[in-house]
Length: 199
Image (cartoon, rainbow, N blue to C red; front, side, top):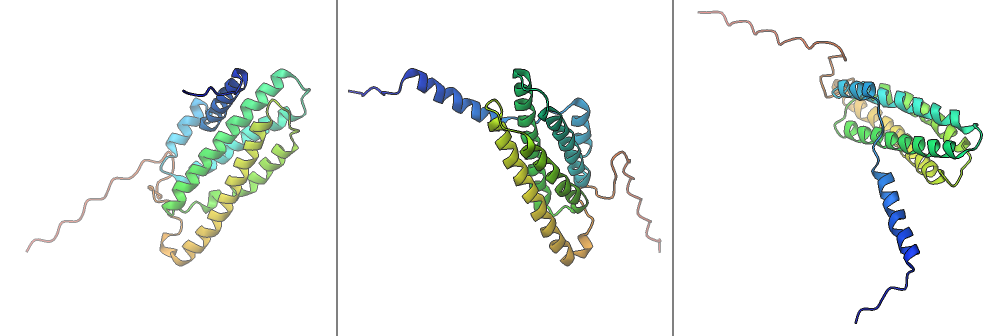
């Protein structure tokens, strides 16, 4: 005979829906506006520009969180902070994924890594200045962890790229994706090869 589990239904339901909530939170993708999506798409082959875009978006999201920090406490504020913090975390994770990709292919993104590292310290200050509340404390902790991961990654990658390009000077400045073409420019067609002289 099968033994019945002695876990009360209310506890089982809490465990089930609680774990589902955490899974959904981890699987969330960043909410980008149509113009932001288009800008990211246009910068797909320009690693430095794309990392700069993510830094810009993160600065804008961090400003929204800072603006809510000192507002009077209310249920609406809690919901808004929880949503903004989850979105901030998703954007941090996406930026981190991009660093992984560009680091693996040795794209020279050092011009974007320095401002990213500088701005990340401001994001950390904003997140830690936000007093925790039950309604968004988990989202706040996850945002802090994601910010620390991205900051460490950017710092480590900058050091690795300095060392790599010091010994691969011919690759310095290359982004591995049409690096000679800037966003908005039209690539020039290949010049026809001169005909060999006839005997």
